[in-house]
Image: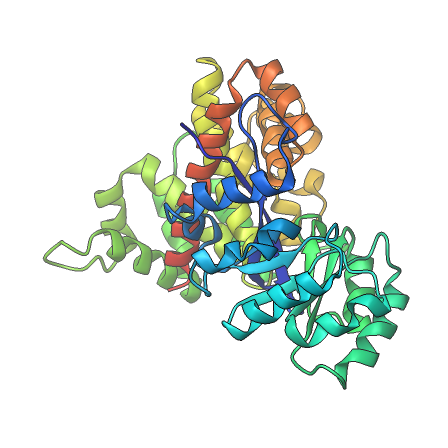
Length: 408
């Protein structure tokens, strides 16, 4: 028996991930859930909160959960601790007296509530004192109109936070930011925010040099050690990571050479990949770093399920480098051609071609809860959707662990 889950990041004004909206998935045979809203909510709660796996999927951050009308009237959220999630009142709910009574009770019990896909109307005004988040779909409600509503409500309901949904571009993020939104949801953060430069910055250059070295068939540890030695922050992160893994040892690891002896070449190559990616993302939302690590893990695990001819390490590199343009603010073509990668990896990362390209497309489709695309790619790759769902959740848990440890 498997549970199925996807997530959409929620970012603050600094592009830092503060939570995730958890999305219900019905199983291997139904890309779009063939169940009603009530059953979908109940299944998501039963599968992911009674077993505590949702905390792993969100990395301990906020979870936004959709609740339809009947679930709210029946006070279903009261079955769970008030800190478990934020209750999203679905846009299909009618603003009845009965619903208002439920919302007031949940508010008084200390639960946090959100109005999903909100469209301003007089009927919903009486709900505003009892909710904490108002979510606007900016593809439906113009940003200017939402901004006018935000300015009016700031003085009336001080505790309200406003969330812009379906922010697809950097320009939309800037406009929503200017309009007064506090939180943002969409895929703009995972797309390149292109800044054309003639040269890379020192931090980015260090990262690129490390990527070049670990992409070689045989890692030159002398060269890698020299690169690390010239970057205090990166050296510190690496040693913290290694000593966290070797805490049971009598003596701490104090040099990169000691790390090499303990880890060996392949594990060290992957270790550098994780930390160097985190290092590159220091001025980026941490969700972008986490997504890179998660995608690398998912790609490697999936490659072992679909073909003996696909190298797990090549799949890992394709997943890791698939967001390199967003991390370093340079076109992906320019970056990937500087690395000694196989033609298969380059074709996958730049054009999403070949088996590795299909793996990347499947990872992206799952990130976006595009179940129709997921089903099509699973059929093409001849892998059961239940297997993909399990591997995706495993990769989420792994990336959360890595992201947490690298922040220490």
